[in-house]
Length: 136
Image (cartoon, rainbow, N blue to C red; front, side, top):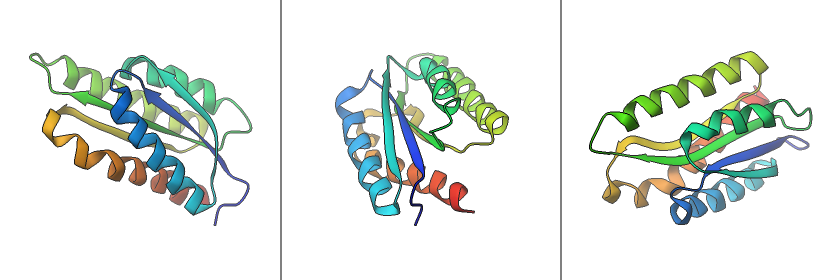
């Protein structure tokens, strides 16, 4: 168990209905692992996730952050480039703060029909990843 440890969620609102499923799963997984979800910060899209994550990681009461969202396949390479930049920024924040960041971002380049079956598993895996890093 991880009693006393708190996590926060950063969630993209661009795919709000789908992300609400992810948030529900992240909260239930955290509860099952003994983690308290302290904050739930919704941002417009993936590009805003690193800044919101940084602000949360700077709080002494936050032990880890789980980032949830979707980067769908588009007609250009924009999503792939954005996904790489966002993930790299989240890795850099994790290393700079020595606090885990769980990434539950579907994509980039995920197709609409691939999204529904992956929502809960990605959210669950992201919470389990930060839990593993917090208790190790």
